[in-house]
Length: 254
Image 1 (spheres, rainbow, N blue to C red):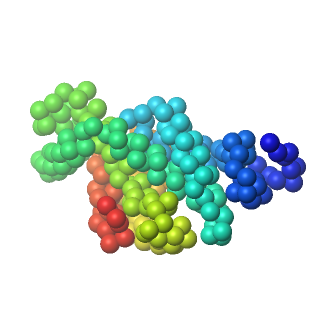
Image 2: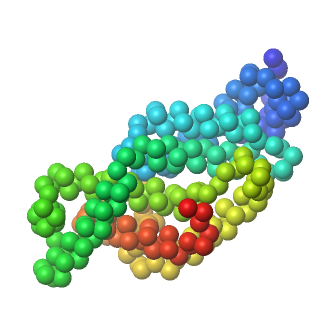
Image 3: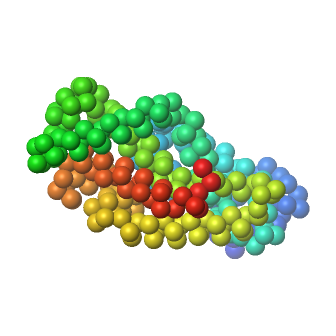
């Protein structure tokens, strides 16, 4: 057991780690976890658009907490890297892995995205305007309800793809590949390249990416802001994510 030091803040756990490494103790580990729960809360909140079609908030939170506990056990303060940085990568990576395991229809989702894009383009050319949801559903040979369901799954899959642009390919516990410091540098470089790629998108694509991922707006809210239909927002979003993947492909380990 141990006595808490009032000088230690809720986010500064360096002192606790010094004690935990010298004498591993569940109580100490739990205290570190409790003081680092802001990492879990932020990761869950910032990935909600991604997982809401595949899992409940509670399931994601549980996965995140387990990842945080594993991060405590595998963290090495000697590498001179902040625990928040290390744990954030671990927790976010665990959420992405969990969502990927729940996604049972990735091929059908990708197929629908291609068919939707083709149908939208053909109808737009024929009608000289954006097609309605009813017109798209008729063109695709499905009901409007089915169109809504598949569109939602496609959006969730695209969100996961965006997260993978930044976080995939990292295994910060695998000492045989690289150190956590090197992982952090690579992550920073990938983020820089992603920002550059976003700047090179068309205006509407950049706006959708910014509003959806950074302002956390829903498709319905983005459609109101931009004055276009939700289906058009979905299409722009999917195209933008694919462009970003292509732009930084050399930095990916997929």
